Length: 123
Image (tube, rainbow, N blue to C red; front, top):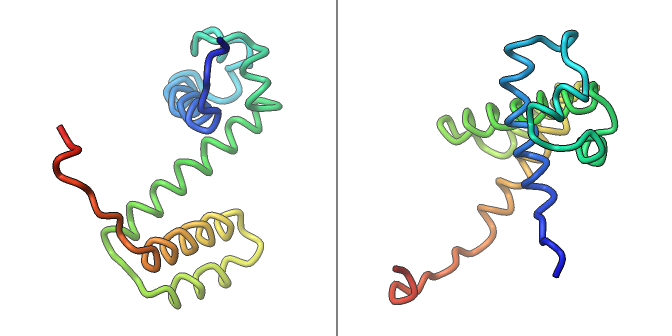
């Protein structure tokens, strides 16, 4: 039976693990081969998830930025209208997409009814 892999989670794991490598060695000093070796995957696997080192690095920065913005917003909630204004003010910035994703997730979270948890089903 083939191994079932959550590709989104696996990609995120590779990104998180690569952060320390970039911090330690620097972007210019690392090759995809070195990244793959340090991450314990084949270069083919790494290229399956990221077409280039630049792409991997950009996705890493986007992931970190999204986490930072989410953390900030969870600690200092702002009305959806302010998030929309923030997204509009970013116009051509890559952060606009991140802010838009967060705004939409937040709207869904606020409009989706909470699921009831059956206490007897928890250990």
